[in-house]
Length: 111
Image (cartoon, rainbow, N blue to C red; front, top):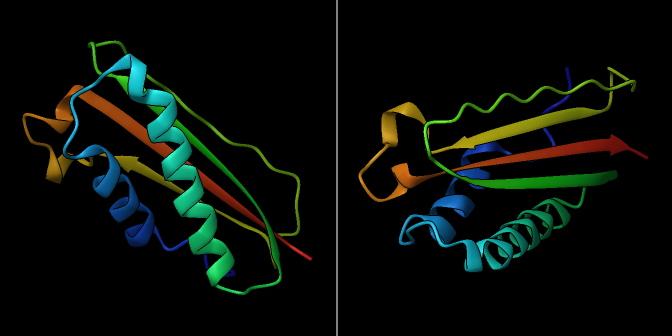
């Protein structure tokens, strides 16, 4: 299969830079989402690969409610790909960032 459209460690770092120092604040969520998506799209553009990209970002307050997500794509399996990053992962939770979740999905469609 082709490489993912966005290396997961780079996307995880993007989330860490934006959200790790923060506590959940509904008034800041849109700004965080915009910043995360802008940085992800810049990182993808910097790869200079022949892809069109779609990036989504969800930030959710952690209240004990569950979240389930799924993807389905009709695409070229040889050239198109998807990368999903969930933050924080189980190994990196701390008392501050355990108050919210962030899920980034980046999809790359070959030209």
